[in-house]
Amino acid sequence: MRSLKRFRSIRLKLIIAFMLVSVAPTLVATELATQLVVDTFESSLRVWLYETSRFFFGNLLDERREAIGIAESMIEQGALDPVASGAAKTLPGSIQKLMDALGYDVLVIYDADKKAIFSSRPVAGLEEAPLSEEATLYTVQLDGRPMLMAGALRPFERDGRRMFLLVGIFIDENYIGNINALKSFEMRLYYRQGADLVEFYSSRDGVRADRLLRRSVVSDLAGGAPYVFQRAAEGGRFLGVYTPLYDNRQQLLGVIFCGLRSDVGVAGWVNRTNIFVAILVLGSALAVLGALLLSRQLTKPLLRLAEGVRAVSAGDYQQAVAVTGRDEVAELSEAFNRMTVQLARLREVEERMRRQERLSTLGEVAAGLAHEVRNPLGIIKTTAELLQRSRNLNEAETRRLGYVVEEVRRIDALIRDFLTFAKTPQVFALIKPSEIVARALDFAQQEAERRGVAISFADSAHDAVVRGDPGQVYDAILNLMLNALDAMQGGGQLSIRQWSDGEHVRLVFADTGPGVPEEIRPRLFDPFVTSKPSGAGLGLAKVFAVMETHGGKVEYKGNPGGAVFELTFPVAASEDDARA
Image (cartoon, rainbow, N blue to C red):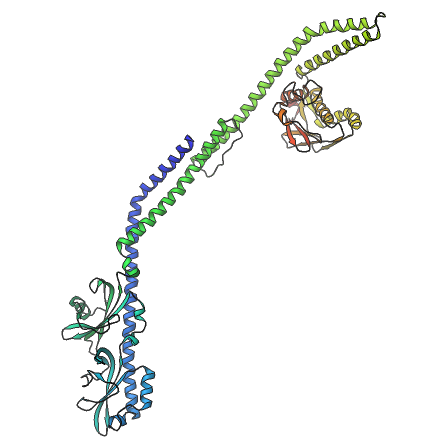
């Protein structure tokens, strides 16, 4: 756990270091990004507001042009003669339907003195015709309510008399349309009164005349500016654009203001402070995420190394760590893997030396035992055999002396096994394992048939050659065969397979017996370890000793259907290997 905490602290240090290193670049990038976002937003907003005002202004121009056309059409068709002559007090039905269809609200006829002689609606402020005969904007009152009107004044002749026709449309909530649906948006119209520009219409408040347009804005627009954008317009409550309205002489007639409230919606939120904080928080979050990912990438190999070290310290020399990349950590991982391979080899060599030492000690004990015990045993055996020949013994005494002779012979056989186990190979030569297997098969075949065991031999490396003592190798192979036969008392199958990978020759013996009990597998190749009711337990120890002295190994591989033993011999390529 201490190791894990240490690496976690390294990861934390990496994150803190990354954050400290990224502070200055993050602040600079945040400042630049803030400037870019705010400038882009204001530029887009300015363009949108300007285009909105130009659209409204264009609609006004279109309405005034249409009013001129309608007035001229009515004059040419003579449709106004009844009301111009005073014969009719109301507009003809066809003219009224035309005005309703086109959206016009009022029609006024003036005499030569520009005094109103007919009006389709009682509109105050139109009693006298305007001086200009061009399309323009008018301030009127309808039912006592101030109103802005766009219209056109056209002259015409009637019975030799000069008259004037005014056609107009009210700039009211019906004309503005759905502007009020946008709660954060407002449009205002300013009209010149003397030296000042006075607000006389607002999409939010209607007609009013108590607010003057700031002289700085008037000065800029009078100087030829296409529009004026202010972030704190109309008392600081709007982000807005002022667009000028000019008359035919390019004199500043009025101003259209289009603005977004700064305390409602996104327009009020987008400022340098808010954008800076938002980008800084987002950038910091991304920096922390990047630091986490980077620190994890850097510490993950170290954590794997730590786990590998703990596993090796616990005795697992087969541990290996994954190697990713080509950096210093990857080199360290490769060195660790090489170290574990070397440690595994050293442990194997150490275990082999221990076993050889035990076997050597056992051999010395066996040799000493043979010298010390065989002579007394020989005397006992000879004496017992002489007594058996005596005529003075009854049947029971003769039988008991037979037991003595039999047990002495068994002890003598055990001593011979000790001596054989301790004996080291003396004659090495190039041998073919397949030929030795065939010889052992000939010897064991009769016993296998007696027990009902079928033996098969699959040889895919018939010409493979190893260096060894033929007698010792034969004893090892035959021992494994006989053990397999003993394990299959009721019949079964013994499969032998030989193959080579170019460097080693492998012999696999697989039977269908009960297998080796789990509890004795760790000590399976130790002397005097056996699962059979009879036997000294030296057979597999002898096999192990033979393979050790031949530079090979024997392994037990558990099989649910029986036992599997594998012998591995190093391949010998030439006579020089045999003599080495």
